[in-house]
Length: 372
Image (cartoon, rainbow, N blue to C red; front, side, top):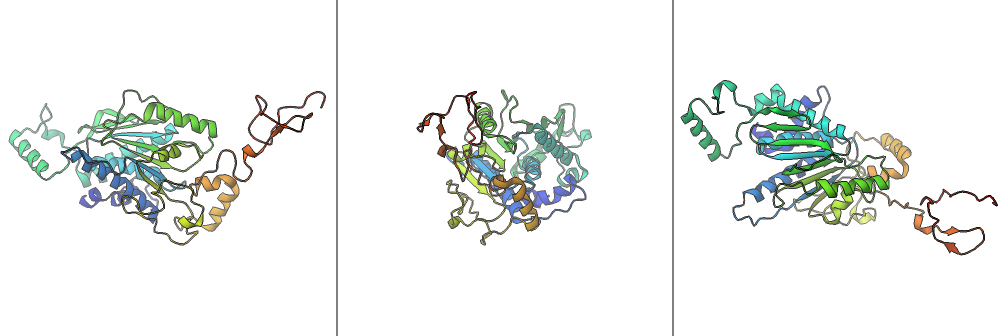
């Protein structure tokens, strides 16, 4: 129990057998990096929160993690929400995703994990009902006070259990004041607040530029300011890059945190391919992390074989560099830019403005006139 409380990675390794029974977990450096950064961010928040002078500043208010699909990112964040309650049981969490089913599935996994015999036996989070009186105190008041004082002196988290009257997938609560709100990114969040906001895959990979821009506007207008205390509340965004104007790009405009970029195939910072200018994803960040890979082309994990990656390149074509290398292409194209094309009438050799109603894509035309 102590080892799991002290390390999110150790907790994930053991909890994975509960969440995915019968599935072998092949640990990798990218999983360790994600776990470490989430833990470092939450521990940094705790240091700032405990500062009596209120002068300490957050090192990582926003943590942006970009990595390829099928990298266990949802499972890691799901375990992280449970692990966080072992350290800070009154933490209020808001879990958002572009797909409401992803948020609901994450909440279900978290709830099943906390209800599992392994979790309850290992961490003994809940109090036995027969030991409490009608007011929720131990029948022996003196023993209760002594035990509570000892726990505070040892800085141990208080015992808690899941609330029976706050047990929906969209809103799970515990008896220590913690809450986990899970819903789609476009859902109504008015009146809700959080200490830790998680955005898991804010866009669908099929979304076009317009839908991506709308999702960013929706987040800015509703969810961005749902932090309980701007001095200590933090955000974690995780997912693959889909467009140049996606939510990760919006976060990177004013980073105020750390960008953990984990491409499928390693790209050296001096190779000219890394286009990100955040300054935290190519060298040591504030936590001292550097991608352990040094050879151009090294894959993220051996299970991603050359045959599999070649299949993905063929299927995704230009989208491969966005979803797998975290370098999304510009909406206007990469080789032939939309801005390079001009419009001409049939009776003039001078370029004309784009006709009203015409699509931006060069292969399309409005229509032919009757006279040809």
